[in-house]
Image 1 (spheres, rainbow, N blue to C red):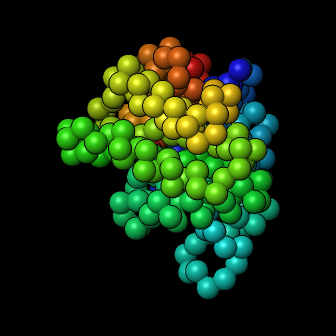
Image 2: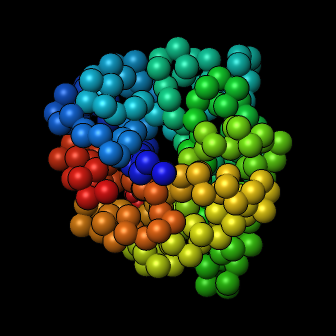
Length: 247
Ligand code: PEP
């Protein structure tokens, strides 16, 4: 059985004070669904303990592949681990588009996270032009194959994959639940091709892109969708709690 997982991605929002206010106001999350909030690095140490009292896991929004070194502006898996980080978003489309993240660096970051016991939330998805020209599956295949390069079956079980069509992120437009389920089913097939069917049915795959409390149930009703990666609607405690309820 795959336990649904709802992860908030705060992006570059919230000071430490605002992050603490969120964590304090959030009601305790009931079991049955796993909740994660991926906060800015600056807020990790302040909110981790408050969130854990609410049954919410702590997540980061990136991780470098080296443990230390001359990599100005980057964050090491050791640094995240020390702060109790359980999940790290890797390969978000904003990182790929604005910070030159490639399939190769995504794979390096995934391996570093796994080495230090951090579960990667691996983001894949096509842009609008790719969708309109029928390239969705080819793009996702290339991203998935690169992400899984050199990964053992045991480590693949620790993956969460987020299928996020780029044209749906922060735009208010969503994929239809059926279309999202079809691509996510295809991602499961790619895992089965690389490993086996038994592995594929155990990996959790989220949908991401303008998910809100009002539309989450439609995605969760789909057989292959195991949760959501949520940006905008994860920023307010009542909205985040409503997403978890809707899941
Ligand atoms: C995201 O940041 O991954 C995301 C899906 O954002 P939004 O929910 O705001 O579209």
